[in-house]
Image 1 (cartoon, each protein chain N blue to C red):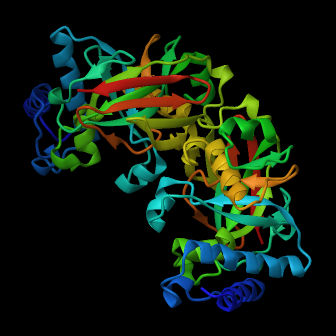
Image 2 (image 1 turned 135 degrees about the horizontal axis):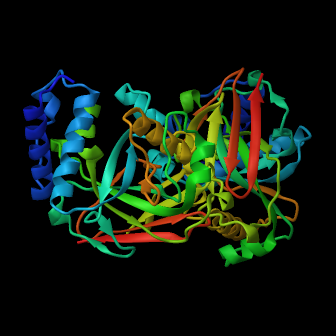
Image 3 (image 1 turned 90 degrees about the vertical axis):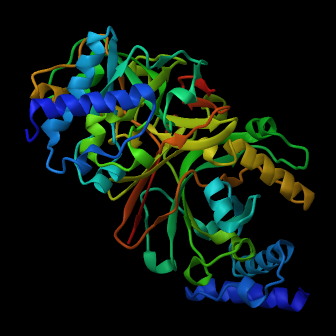
Length: 262
Length: 260
């Protein structure tokens, strides 16, 4: 840890206020270039504690930066992780108010719901699949609090990995009924297909992201709780959205899920 | 373009193919070349291959993705001819020396069970006339220097077709959602691209219907037994001797190719 408690508390308050008031900020590593990974997660944890104290419920977890291309670009070899909240949940077919966000983008994902707790280290794809209740199509609406999306990985982690809103829906499936590596996705914006991919775009297999999350938490003495909803990471580049846009994600064998922006 | 020039350019592309050489873009030398001219040049290039003993085994559809359409600044697909000399079986090595500047595309191949003659055909007619779909590699190659192609150049050059490899399974198109089926492309063990069926004109059967209708207006039909490559589902991957690639398509199967 390079930052003291008071600084961590101040940065957490600053970033959360930016989120709640929908305004952007320069990345925090401009002011604290020496901050380390522990500091970054400590800021995220403080934001989480602030929300819990206010009565927000944490409904699940998310992995970010899950493509090899993105990790290479950022110079890291593991994804980053954050949490998702009850107020971030949008019903399938529901509406997101763009005015509550800064510069939202949306990405297609496979969401996992766990039937058992998972604790690393040593967690692997097999352990993840065995502990999964079902998978379901999901989309994450990310909204970095950093100006013009200019950030580095530590700033992103402190900012709860750009988490903002999410929607799940469509046909849930037990993991034994789907090949999560080749499962295809088509994301449509206002009826036009704009992004195509397959599950393998996430670390070779979306369950690998969940295993890494369990191992990351295990190293900190934490675990993925039973019942957790986990967004396993964007399968394609995030797509920018504006008021009036309607987005539908179709997942092979798993139906579709939609969201509208107002 | 007059007939003599069309024959000359078709011959030039055929010679380039045989000698593994490239030519300067036709569109650079003949800026007024039309797409219709280009298809006639393609016919001459194919006529030379048929005269040399090859036979037609199917068709290919190109320029089916938004990315490639924007790159070439055209908003319609194109087509070319598949000949028996282009077909490799899964597991065979393709000598890289037989190609000029190859790139790999992961695609869905259709094997036709009935003749089909457009125009007026829909995606449903395609499904009804299809024996099965297979994962496949199309190895595209360009006889045009440095791939500097406009739509007229690629059309004249048989839609940049090189060789193709069909995959390990054939699946009834009634049993797979061809719009959402995912594609994973690996090169030397590393995932280099993913995509889905809808990348080809929204649905591979849309691309097939476009082809059948376009050919129908020219008086050409799809034939039972034809192989048709329905268009790339992701970015083109440059390949060279020593490379080994695999494509997996969700609900269909896989296909491997290696270059010696």
